Image 1 (tube, rainbow, N blue to C red):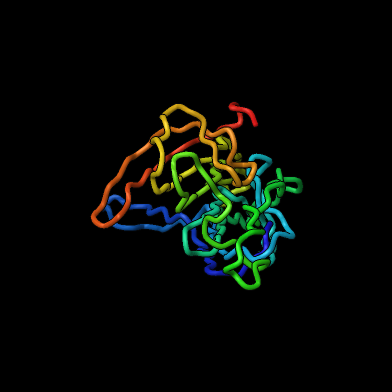
Image 2 (image 1 turned 45 degrees about the vertical axis):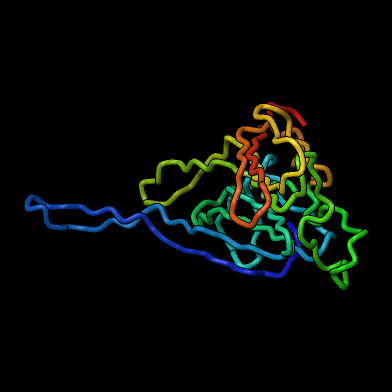
Length: 235
């Protein structure tokens, strides 16, 4: 997936609680079904030796601390911010009763250790972190923040008669970008193609959906840009 220093990890195991009332509107029974666990973890990327998830290939992932069932990723986030190391996070669900033998696996063709920061001398050693936004450039100004998100919708089957979730489908894959730029040039135009030099290949060919111009006391003018990519747009 990628290597990094774990910043947070969560696994919330839960069932759906269905309340059955009697003729007096009192509870006659409680039915507990559709068990699943919400999974989330975030790490500070510290190596370029492995690749980040590509959810366009599928949703299934392997988590070393989870045995049995199926884990499906629904969201990944890569975040670059001025003055901070790069972070990456993954969220999804563990279905303990789902026993598919060949679920569509997520790809791993995205380099998490981007951009190239060979010329940056302030982190020592520089091989252990991607620091700030050095290496990311945009024509509108100085890149101060970039968030690249992959989204995959997970639709669960109706629970089996025994109350277990046995299947789910993934669909609607898309990528979104949130870009923060200290303005030195012209605000990017809505519906134009967003070009960020130095970003990973998964940041290419996005179409800008909004471009905000902001001023604040004692701060320079900022552009905040949102963009989207779907597979039909091509690579």
